[in-house]
Amino acid sequence: MPSGTLGATSIDTYEFRAFAEEVFEPLQRADQRRWAHAYLGALLSVPGKKTLQRLAKEVSPAPAAAHGLQQFINASPWDWGPVRRSLARTVVSQGMPRACTVAELTIPKRGVHSVGVHRRFDAELGRTVNCQRAMGLFLAVEGGCVPVNWSLLLEESWCADKERRARARIPASVTARPAWKHILDFAADMAVNPGLTGIPWVLDLRRTPDARAVVEGLARRGLDFVCEVGAAEPVLPASAVASAAGLGELMARSPVRQPQVVMRQAATGRLERLTVHLGDIRLPGRAGEQSGGQRVYRALARPTGVGRQGARYWITSLTDWRAEEVLALTRHAAAESAVRDLGLFGVQDFEGRSFPGWHHHMTMASAAHAFARLHAQRRAPALAAAHSVCA
Image (cartoon, rainbow, N blue to C red; front, side, top):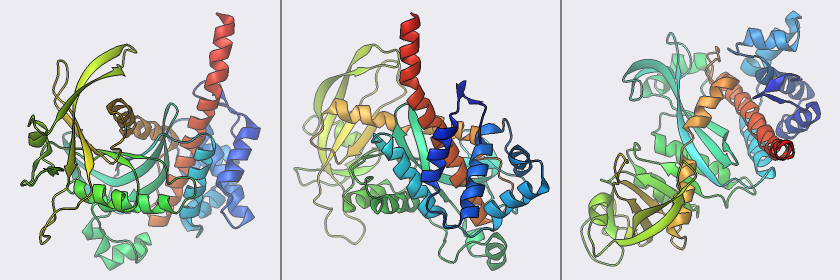
């Protein structure tokens, strides 16, 4: 059990045990639940790099600990899907999340044998890296975002090679798919999880080649959303017959846009006045379709202003929400800080090569991150009260 500190906050053993029992309840065997508790506790306690050897030493100095953790992560056939859904329900039980959001994770790797590893250009680093590429589903809670599901993006070079698939134990159902399909897979999985269907989705689709597919897919599932898109995203005015135009161009036309001044809280904490443009839009039909869909969405544009890098554009299904409410929701799209925090829980330290092993480890790392976040969230009011008394 973790007995040290996490973020300068002591970890309550009873709280940890209750969390682990709830999250790992779907595991069918008692030994699986026992090793899950041990692995989670080690992830929370071991500082620095979280290799299997270091985690095992935290559990026990006996050789059996290393063998047990190795079997649990890399060889045991437990299904990570029910555990992740249980994790999501546990997060919701602590307070309704404000939004669902998705972030991409790049995991640098050496060699060519880890499942999904390939070379790709990293725009942030400005160079080509050898890496795994993953997408994570996060729930935005008080103070941050918590990961509750993962998808590993595989290149065709992995999916078409029977020998590589066999070595990495990639299931036959797993194929090479674009990122937007993984997002809709997350949405489909959330739809069957009771208590999670009413949470709006907040997504940054500016780098997604087929943003419209995501918007349409969420709409078909009856999910509310706020999706940021690029200025060139093709749209149609809702109330007129016209050819498709880029959203930036359309929102620049005075007959379509509706300027509105809103008040919002700046990063400094002060209120600031902000002019935004609103407009009702439709999406154009795809190739071979006679006309676009009849569903009407609200477009929101934040023009370029002093100190800003450029105009920004969103498409939302929340047509009856005030602009301030939509803008407030967009802040939950930034899960980058949560992705960085995941490094504290070993997401980049997994040394196994198999597809099941990777998903097992990511499930455990997500549970560790969630416990730490929820623990800090519960401690915050008590600490604030203590500081108030001291003051």
